[in-house]
Length: 252
Picture 1: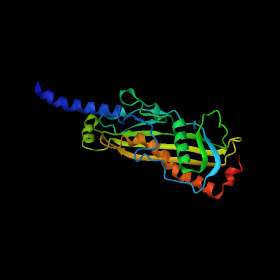
Picture 2: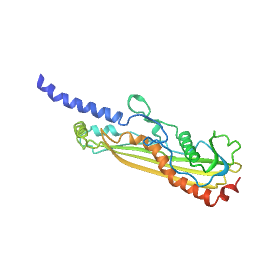
Picture 3: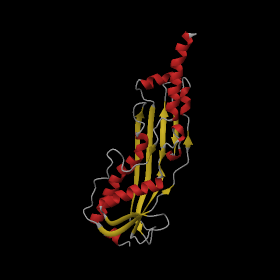
Picture 4: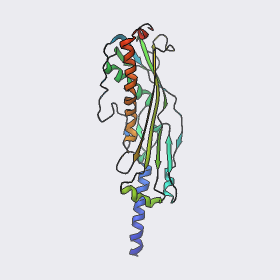
């Protein structure tokens, strides 16, 4: 009776590790901005500040609704790889039924950008407002979220549950891909359809994921995406503030 037990126990262990990895392969995270590390706003400072106030509204959400889960298929021997893909990662449940990431892109992305513009010192005031109005501001910054795609590819090297042994030895479980597509624009408060400045921000990250590495980056990358794509966007806006302030001032 002991011989079968010695054979079954390693297989059962592999199945348990496989199930745990596929059901909760990313540690649940709460949105944090600035991204950590380093946990700092961008070191970009405007050469001059315009006497204009800016109201930042929650961004429009035009993301898709795709939700595909098939990573369980790698438990089947000879199955090469499987893909999970989600347009809205904050709706995905991780291990223990908690959200994969706790975030509200419409609010969180807008607040992050407001903080960065305020920190850069381009305008006399930058504030976050609700979607119904801009108060007494001179300019309104609005945005449209087009994508926060999250995709993970998993493989057990066609070995089914036994392939977990390779994971435990450090081999990659697969690859994770994050994408962010976001459009932002500044317009006069009284004529929001008349854009004074606009910028399209795009981010894509692909990295290997294993039992011991790469899982946290897949979620933390959303705050990283905002900060990385803001570098050229803010540089472009700073150039207008410094060289062509009339573009913004004449639109009040």
